[in-house]
Image (cartoon, rainbow over all chains, first blue to last red; front, top):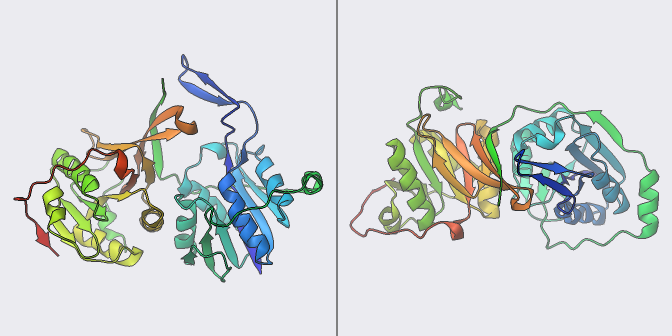
Length: 184
Length: 166
C-alpha cells in the first residue's frame, strides 16, 4: 500500500517581522511542518504503508518534509513554486492533482482544512476520518492519533535523505485577496 | 452539472441568488438574513429535521436534507444559491470543501462576512499569521464561508416569522 501524506508548511510564528508602515508581515526563516500533519503521518506509518510525504510550497519549504522523513516517511516530494506560500487551497489541490505521485490512499491532517475534502472531490475518492487505510480514500486524521516524537538518530538520518523537488503547476485560485491589514 | 453557475464569474451581473445556510444554528441563520436583506435575496436552510425556529431566526425556506454533498449540491442548484454559509465544524468543513471543489467556488474560514455593496458578492474577513494580519478576501462564486457561531451575535428570534418547508 502506498500512502500519500499531505504535509503543509506553515510559518514560524516566533520568527516574523511585522511592518506597520508597509502593512506587511515578513517571514524570517523557513516554514515548519504543520503539527496537524503529525497524526496522519503516524497513522500511515502505523498502517504499514510505504509513506510518501508531499508538500506544496516555496522551493525552500523542505523542513516539514525532513520532519516527516524523521517520523518514518519513506519518500518526500516537494511541489515547488515561487509563489507557493501564497497559493489558496484550490490552487494547491490543482498542483497535487497535476503531479500526484502514484498512491492507493491519501492521509491529511487538519479536520477543519479544505485540501482533504477538495482532493477527495477532485479525485472522486471516498472520504474518511478513520485511521485504518482504505484504498481510494482520503483520510483526515485529527489529534485522536497521537504522534511519537522522532529520535535524534532519525532526525540526523532524515537530514541526509533526498527530497524530490518537482515544479508545481497550481490550479486556478478560488479566493482573491482584496486587502490586508496588520492588526493592532 | 453547474449550468446555474453561468454568469456568476467576477465582474458579471450582480448576483441575486439565494443564501444557503447549512445546519440549524440560529446565529448563522440570522447573519444570513442580514446579508440577504442587504442584497434583496432569500435565505434557504438545509438541516435534518427542520423546525419552525429556523424561520423565527430568519430563514425563508427550510429543507429536510442530510448534510451530505449530493443532496446539498442539488439544493444549491434548485435554490440558485450563490452563497453558502456553514458553522466551523469538521462536518461542515468537509461538506463545504467538497462542494467548493465541485462548483469551482472559493471557501474561506472567516471571522466575519459581509456583502460588497457594489458587486453584491460575499466578502470575508479572515485572520492570517496567528491573527497578526487581517485579510479581506473575495471567494469566487459560488462563495462558501465557515463562520464561528460562538463569535456571531445571538439571533433575535421572531416567533411570528414564518417560512416554507420544502
